[in-house]
Length: 239
Image 1 (spheres, rainbow, N blue to C red):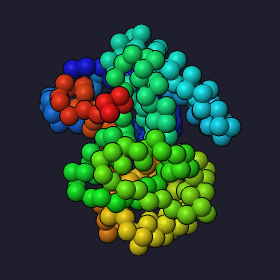
Image 2 (spheres, rainbow, N blue to C red):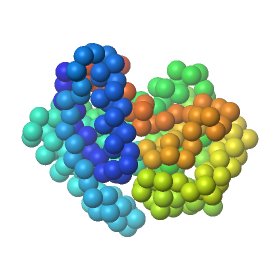
Image 3 (cartoon, rainbow, N blue to C red):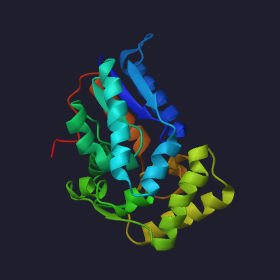
């Protein structure tokens, strides 16, 4: 089994889920007392958020590259960025660190393609919804993406940090999220990508009439594929 290097704390809430899913599925594959070999570097997320809010993405990248190199120095054989937004700098991180990076958007695009969908709604931070780093991986698989309108994008972004990143969702926020999701479906979305690893706290499969793509679970499964040496793995630089 190979050793995974997880970049967590972005946020700690979803990092717990990554650790759970990866270990759970390693055990399902191998049985007995077999679990993942993994290393976790957990950030104080405030240090990441203040750089992103200031559009200092270079500063964010430097923090993550440094963390990845520390994991590499103690045995990590691949990097798993436990957040969607951090994938804005995935290719640069992979190149500078010199380890394969399991890409969350490519793994998600493969999952959507497997369902034979061609148009999906994307929820996440404003960076994930508005920038191209996630959407372009879907486009490469023939999948078009729609995102909420301006006011709804702002709401989603703010609730991610005000509530979901702290581990909860208010009933009012859940109601508004579901309204946003239903609007995306009305606009033609055949499925909904939860493009923030905390979004499963507020949108669940039973809530909506179309497939939900939980990027945390999808990404964790791709990491398991690497750890077990299987062929179906999505790297940042395999375009």
